Image (tube, rainbow, N blue to C red; front, side, top):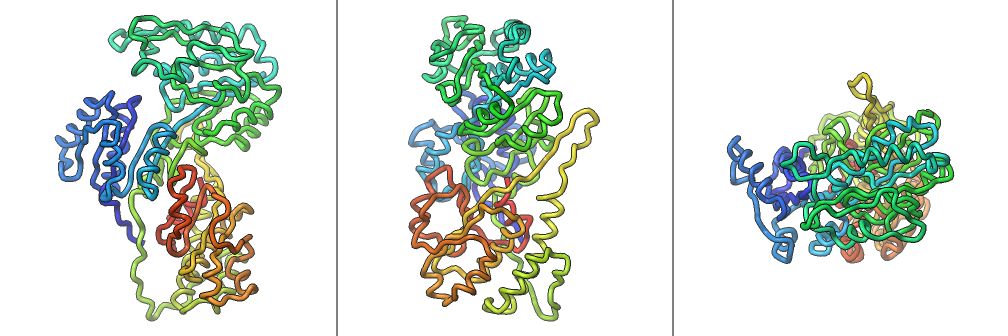
Length: 525
């Protein structure tokens, strides 16, 4: 396959990491081969300008990198929705991603969005270390990190452990609050006066809540606050479900580790999550059950490091493809992959002896349904690629990395997909996607087939079963249910166009590559 970069990528970074995240987005798009326009957050425009000027001075041409000082209103949205913009990189709130998609529903959006992150602490934890890690994870950057721990879920006896609670309060009170010009300050100011949600969190207690440490406004600007700790936060309450983005920590009681995981997973977001426990069974259970993109064991849950800990979340913490920033796949979303024009003369039948039996059987069984020998040869080549990359990358045992006293494990989890087969789809392209799904091997994959496709191809029920490889399918005029991931085979139908503005839906409508290194990324997270 050949990679063709997007022509223009717009980068819209946040204010809370004014240089690092801005540079990360710009450099990723430039590395892909795209031209870049960066729209800085108004609060930190000069920081971004300094970064851009440094890149210009280093030799990046102004023809391929420009900065646009536009406000966060219809002017800024006109940039996002411009017809010449191929894709947008966003780090910001889920609401902003939703707004962008409403302006341009088919926008190729790579967005790392909100988080409501929790750190679970069990009775088997080293409580001294846990208290310090919870405090640092909650109040670094005054809680203005999307990865910040705004909830501590205390299991069993930890919830009423007076020594632990006293240590937590002491750790927070020892943090000096001040502005950046004060060297001793470890908790800085808010970027601006508290939003409505944050002000409520800083000043209001809901049913059953008390202040373990009450927040306090420290100057007249409204931006400097002593951190606060809420005790008795209930599952399902305002604070447990809402990203407030500031110096407030809520403590929630869990009866057991299972209950703690249920609370942790109940959030609409899934960015970062942590656990403190010295019990290996608890750690294993938690790692296999929690639904978040970055998991941290016996340490703080902020401060992800490029390559060592690629960053990105699940559920509403990610909008778009979901390829993690700082990871090996991130750049792949800023372009398209085109098949090489192959010469088939003199090529013998591709060897698929190493392919799993069910895949080889599917490839062989659909041979008579293909329009040409070339189509079938491509399926054989794709099957070999699927097998290779599944074993080498997607299902290979995770390694701990090169550090001696810290393990960093990368893993790929199945991401259930729905395949939509439109009226003008080809049998060969459907077969290509099906065999990749069969290797991914997940019961939740499904196929939605247009009745016009069956009429045009004259497939019998028996032939359709062969072509779909035994995966569950339904014949329907339009999609009856909206999935989280949709793979299109054939043209994009009107009903799909109407769904594309939904930020909870990712539509993959690119070429179905015979290279599994590209296509199979859609099936994993």
